[in-house]
Structures are given as structure tokens and as C-alpha cells.
Image 1 (tube, rainbow, N blue to C red):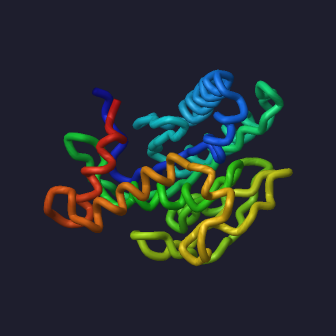
Image 2: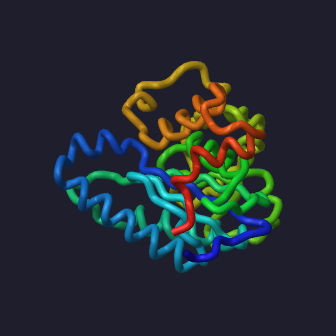
Length: 233
């Protein structure tokens, strides 16, 4: 088994927005799209120093030892995705959420709510959007990749992990997005209902945590039960 980054770690979750709709539209051709997307993310994020923790369906979980490396990789990945000529003329838009913390590393992988917070931040975003937590932004300072800028999206209420001040890393030509899908939004939109497997996995964790179907212990320990799928490779 490879060693996981420890100490201060920046987590990144990625997810294809509208993947179920793409599957319906492309049919068997979706496997080609998914394969290309996976290859591009592995190349760009790996080149930036990211370690792939796991992939489930169209979602990735990476960790980085430096916040700047994570942001560099996210920018490179989004640019590569936007420049790709996708089969069937479809748009493949990937949302990305980053959060930095000091998680524990157990036998099965990362343990702690920092993982859940990163996943929630990703889930609040839209395809093509890069979202950062306050901690990640603070570690960056003003050291941003060329052609990017920060937008303060304000304090958002994230389910189960409380409030978080979220920032968008805006790229030229990709600055404008709909409001975040945080707890302050009243009810799901039609786009939300189109079947996002990533969101369902996060909701799964919430259900188990609330009903106590994990092993007894603190919330940080309960998180381990759901996120063991995101273990070391």
C-alpha cells in the first residue's frame, strides 16, 4: 500500500455534473467519455502532486500535501476538460471542491470530518466550477495560478458540517455560475433531480450518521464507516 499524505492535507473531490443525463444521451458512448475524463484528471492532478485515494463511478478523491499544488492541478484539469473535443459534441463539466485540514490516518485510510467537508463543498458547486474552503484560501494567500482570480461566495450552510466561507477560483471565460447548492437553497431544482450519484453517496453518509448505523464513537470516527471506500490504493 502507498503511504497517504499526512499532517496538513488538502482534499479534492471531483464529479461530472449531469452524468446520468450524459449516460442517457450517449448510451454505450458514455464509457469512452468517462475513460477520457478519468485519464485527463489522473494526468493533470497527478502531475501537480496529487495522490488518487479512490474513484467511484465518475467521482474522484485526491489528496495533496500543499494547497497550492491542489489548486494548480484543479486549474490544469479544468482547462484540459474545456479544450477537449468530446464525442457527440457533448459538454463534460466537472465540479471540484477543495478543503484543507489535519485528518487522522487509520488502517482503512483518512478519518475525520475534513473529508466530509470537502465532499460537501464539491456537492454545492456546478460543473466547471472550482470551490475552495476558507482554510484552503488562507493557505494560498495571493499565490494563484496565472489567469485565475478568487471570488468570495460568502458563508454557506453545508449539511452536517456547519457553515463554511466558500471561494470560487475563477478562470478566464469560466467566471459565472448559478448560486451554490447549499442548505440555504429552498428545495431541489430540476437539474438537481437528474440523478447525481455523488450527491447520493454523501446523503448515504448523512443517513448512516444520523441513525447511528456506524460503530459507536465520535462523529469523526463514524465518518470512517462511510468513507472507507476512499481508502489508500
